[in-house]
Length: 251
Ligand SMILES: C[S@@+](CC[C@H](N)C(=O)[O-])C[C@H]1O[C@@H](n2cnc3c(N)ncnc32)[C@H](O)[C@@H]1O
Image 1 (cartoon, protein in one colour):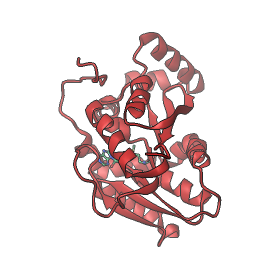
Image 2 (image 1 turned 45 degrees about the vertical axis):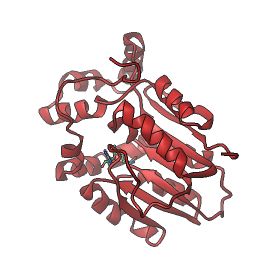
Image 3 (image 1 turned 60 degrees about the horizontal axis):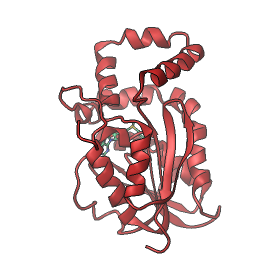
């Protein structure tokens, strides 16, 4: 495995597009929404709290892989003058987001953007924005693309602009993974059974979930290599993290 490649190699086909650009994908996402927001809502709030804006400040941010807008919505709730650009590539997720974001009409727009491929960002995203966030999406792109994307994000930030990523990470060590499972199993006594008894659809989704998921340290290193400062893991619990940094003010 090349030094910059930490991903699980399942040898199989990349099923990400088939899963997300489907009615099944969005139906699953909708059906698990309440549980997810109960578990993840506070982490999304922390992302909002980490941003450097005054409560009434007007600013523009991009949410990469925004899906139905859960992360962007939390930022807009905290900053009533904020404007969001929600980038995603799934027509189904964006259509559902259009329904859920009705109360935010006029404050956001969706932009179609495939994060898996490099090149120019869509013209609808301004050349520079005040902040970039992403939630539960970066683990869907390859290591090489993560590195490239972080550079693109830095280039699209104003000097001093922040980038925050909320994402699951891989353990990369069986002892760590066992400890994560131990804690998970105490919280949810059915977790071990669920892990070893996945339906075909759950297995497909799981394989897609972990395909390009890598440990935390290389990702933090990618961020530093891309020229961010103030790089830190601002929050972590077992396999979920929020890391980020800002574009230096002087660059
Ligand atoms: C797990 S969901 C997270 C959605 C949202 N950010 C949240 O936190 O609720 C992953 C999102 O990433 C999007 N996505 C996955 N791969 C993508 C890609 N290559 N380009 C753009 N969006 C992608 C999916 O369509 C989906 O909306």
